[in-house]
Length: 203
Image (cartoon, rainbow, N blue to C red; front, side, top):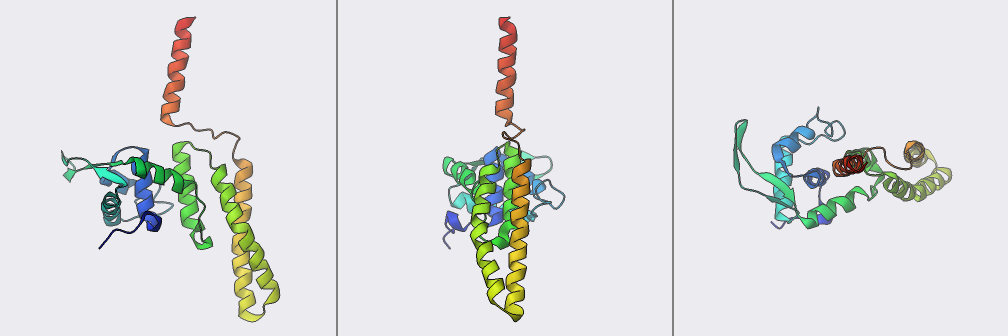
Protein backbone atom coordinates (compact mmCIF):
# COMPACT_ATOMS: atom_id res chain seq x y z
CA UNK A 1 0.00 0.00 0.00
CA UNK A 2 1.38 3.41 -0.96
CA UNK A 3 1.79 5.93 1.87
CA UNK A 4 -0.82 8.68 1.99
CA UNK A 5 0.18 12.09 0.62
CA UNK A 6 1.38 14.75 3.03
CA UNK A 7 -1.95 16.59 2.91
CA UNK A 8 -3.65 13.51 4.37
CA UNK A 9 -1.48 13.06 7.46
CA UNK A 10 -3.38 12.29 10.62
CA UNK A 11 -3.16 14.57 13.63
CA UNK A 12 -0.95 11.99 15.37
CA UNK A 13 1.44 11.96 12.39
CA UNK A 14 1.61 15.76 12.33
CA UNK A 15 2.37 15.78 16.04
CA UNK A 16 5.22 13.32 15.68
CA UNK A 17 6.62 15.30 12.75
CA UNK A 18 6.47 18.60 14.65
CA UNK A 19 8.19 17.12 17.71
CA UNK A 20 10.96 15.59 15.62
CA UNK A 21 11.31 18.96 13.84
CA UNK A 22 12.01 20.62 17.19
CA UNK A 23 15.11 18.45 17.60
CA UNK A 24 16.12 14.82 16.93
CA UNK A 25 14.23 12.47 19.25
CA UNK A 26 13.60 8.79 19.90
CA UNK A 27 10.05 7.51 19.45
CA UNK A 28 10.04 6.59 23.14
CA UNK A 29 10.62 10.23 24.15
CA UNK A 30 7.85 11.37 21.81
CA UNK A 31 5.48 8.80 23.29
CA UNK A 32 6.15 10.20 26.78
CA UNK A 33 5.28 13.72 25.63
CA UNK A 34 2.04 12.44 24.06
CA UNK A 35 1.05 10.14 26.92
CA UNK A 36 -2.09 11.00 28.88
CA UNK A 37 -0.01 12.68 31.58
CA UNK A 38 2.47 14.22 29.12
CA UNK A 39 2.69 17.94 28.47
CA UNK A 40 1.10 17.55 25.03
CA UNK A 41 -0.87 14.38 25.74
CA UNK A 42 -3.10 16.38 28.07
CA UNK A 43 -4.26 18.24 24.96
CA UNK A 44 -4.28 15.30 22.53
CA UNK A 45 -3.39 11.82 23.70
CA UNK A 46 -1.59 9.51 21.26
CA UNK A 47 -1.04 5.86 22.27
CA UNK A 48 2.54 4.61 22.13
CA UNK A 49 1.82 2.12 19.34
CA UNK A 50 0.36 4.92 17.21
CA UNK A 51 3.48 7.04 17.79
CA UNK A 52 5.67 4.25 16.39
CA UNK A 53 3.33 3.69 13.43
CA UNK A 54 3.29 7.42 12.72
CA UNK A 55 7.10 7.55 12.71
CA UNK A 56 7.22 4.68 10.22
CA UNK A 57 4.71 6.42 7.95
CA UNK A 58 6.61 9.71 8.08
CA UNK A 59 9.82 7.93 7.17
CA UNK A 60 8.10 6.31 4.18
CA UNK A 61 7.02 9.78 3.05
CA UNK A 62 10.57 11.11 3.34
CA UNK A 63 9.64 13.60 6.05
CA UNK A 64 11.89 12.07 8.71
CA UNK A 65 14.89 9.75 8.80
CA UNK A 66 16.01 7.29 11.45
CA UNK A 67 19.60 6.76 12.48
CA UNK A 68 21.33 3.55 13.40
CA UNK A 69 19.78 1.57 16.23
CA UNK A 70 21.62 2.19 19.49
CA UNK A 71 21.48 -0.11 22.55
CA UNK A 72 19.52 1.22 25.52
CA UNK A 73 19.55 0.28 29.19
CA UNK A 74 15.81 1.09 29.36
CA UNK A 75 14.65 -1.46 26.82
CA UNK A 76 15.11 -2.47 23.16
CA UNK A 77 17.61 -0.69 20.91
CA UNK A 78 16.36 2.69 19.71
CA UNK A 79 16.86 4.83 16.63
CA UNK A 80 16.99 8.61 16.80
CA UNK A 81 14.53 10.31 14.47
CA UNK A 82 15.42 13.47 12.59
CA UNK A 83 13.30 15.64 10.29
CA UNK A 84 14.38 16.12 6.69
CA UNK A 85 14.39 19.61 5.15
CA UNK A 86 11.02 18.82 3.57
CA UNK A 87 9.70 17.61 6.91
CA UNK A 88 10.90 20.73 8.70
CA UNK A 89 9.13 22.96 6.17
CA UNK A 90 5.95 20.89 6.27
CA UNK A 91 5.80 21.12 10.07
CA UNK A 92 6.35 24.88 10.05
CA UNK A 93 3.65 25.39 7.41
CA UNK A 94 1.14 23.15 9.18
CA UNK A 95 1.52 24.86 12.56
CA UNK A 96 0.47 28.17 11.00
CA UNK A 97 -2.54 26.87 9.08
CA UNK A 98 -5.98 27.19 10.70
CA UNK A 99 -8.08 24.12 11.35
CA UNK A 100 -10.29 23.57 8.31
CA UNK A 101 -13.30 22.14 10.13
CA UNK A 102 -14.98 23.57 13.20
CA UNK A 103 -15.04 20.09 14.74
CA UNK A 104 -11.22 20.09 14.76
CA UNK A 105 -10.84 23.27 16.81
CA UNK A 106 -10.67 21.47 20.16
CA UNK A 107 -7.87 19.20 19.02
CA UNK A 108 -5.96 20.73 16.12
CA UNK A 109 -6.00 24.40 17.09
CA UNK A 110 -5.08 23.81 20.72
CA UNK A 111 -2.22 21.47 19.86
CA UNK A 112 -0.87 23.98 17.33
CA UNK A 113 -0.98 26.70 19.97
CA UNK A 114 0.87 24.40 22.37
CA UNK A 115 3.55 23.64 19.75
CA UNK A 116 3.99 27.32 18.90
CA UNK A 117 4.36 28.08 22.59
CA UNK A 118 7.06 25.41 22.90
CA UNK A 119 8.91 27.06 20.00
CA UNK A 120 8.53 30.53 21.47
CA UNK A 121 6.71 31.58 18.29
CA UNK A 122 4.09 34.31 17.94
CA UNK A 123 0.63 32.68 17.66
CA UNK A 124 -1.24 35.75 16.39
CA UNK A 125 -0.95 34.83 12.71
CA UNK A 126 -2.61 31.49 13.42
CA UNK A 127 -5.28 33.05 15.64
CA UNK A 128 -6.21 35.62 13.01
CA UNK A 129 -6.27 32.99 10.26
CA UNK A 130 -8.50 30.77 12.37
CA UNK A 131 -10.84 33.68 13.02
CA UNK A 132 -11.01 34.41 9.31
CA UNK A 133 -11.84 30.76 8.67
CA UNK A 134 -14.72 30.66 11.15
CA UNK A 135 -16.34 34.07 10.69
CA UNK A 136 -18.16 33.32 7.38
CA UNK A 137 -19.28 29.96 8.77
CA UNK A 138 -20.80 31.70 11.79
CA UNK A 139 -22.67 34.11 9.49
CA UNK A 140 -24.05 31.27 7.40
CA UNK A 141 -25.22 29.37 10.48
CA UNK A 142 -26.86 32.50 11.92
CA UNK A 143 -28.82 32.83 8.70
CA UNK A 144 -29.79 29.15 8.78
CA UNK A 145 -30.95 29.42 12.39
CA UNK A 146 -33.15 32.37 11.46
CA UNK A 147 -34.65 30.75 8.36
CA UNK A 148 -35.31 27.22 9.65
CA UNK A 149 -37.67 25.68 12.18
CA UNK A 150 -37.92 22.54 14.27
CA UNK A 151 -34.82 20.44 14.71
CA UNK A 152 -33.05 22.08 11.76
CA UNK A 153 -33.29 25.35 13.69
CA UNK A 154 -32.04 23.66 16.86
CA UNK A 155 -29.04 22.14 15.04
CA UNK A 156 -28.12 25.37 13.25
CA UNK A 157 -28.43 27.33 16.48
CA UNK A 158 -26.26 24.81 18.34
CA UNK A 159 -23.54 24.97 15.69
CA UNK A 160 -23.72 28.76 15.55
CA UNK A 161 -23.37 29.11 19.31
CA UNK A 162 -20.45 26.68 19.36
CA UNK A 163 -18.56 28.60 16.68
CA UNK A 164 -19.45 31.92 18.31
CA UNK A 165 -17.90 30.68 21.55
CA UNK A 166 -14.73 29.76 19.65
CA UNK A 167 -14.61 33.21 18.06
CA UNK A 168 -14.91 34.80 21.49
CA UNK A 169 -12.06 32.59 22.69
CA UNK A 170 -9.89 33.68 19.74
CA UNK A 171 -10.67 37.35 20.38
CA UNK A 172 -9.86 37.01 24.07
CA UNK A 173 -6.58 35.25 23.31
CA UNK A 174 -5.57 37.85 20.72
CA UNK A 175 -6.04 40.56 23.35
CA UNK A 176 -3.86 38.75 25.89
CA UNK A 177 -0.98 37.85 23.54
CA UNK A 178 1.73 40.56 23.89
CA UNK A 179 3.18 42.28 20.79
CA UNK A 180 6.17 39.95 21.01
CA UNK A 181 5.83 36.48 22.43
CA UNK A 182 7.59 36.47 25.82
CA UNK A 183 9.42 33.20 25.25
CA UNK A 184 12.43 32.90 22.95
CA UNK A 185 13.83 29.78 21.30
CA UNK A 186 16.84 28.39 23.13
CA UNK A 187 19.15 29.36 20.26
CA UNK A 188 18.10 33.01 20.51
CA UNK A 189 18.52 32.92 24.29
CA UNK A 190 22.06 31.54 24.00
CA UNK A 191 22.91 34.15 21.37
CA UNK A 192 21.70 36.96 23.63
CA UNK A 193 23.79 35.66 26.54
CA UNK A 194 26.82 35.42 24.25
CA UNK A 195 26.38 39.01 23.10
CA UNK A 196 26.07 40.18 26.70
CA UNK A 197 29.30 38.42 27.63
CA UNK A 198 31.11 39.93 24.68
CA UNK A 199 29.78 43.37 25.56
CA UNK A 200 31.08 42.92 29.12
CA UNK A 201 34.54 42.04 27.83
CA UNK A 202 34.68 45.17 25.74
CA UNK A 203 34.16 47.50 28.70
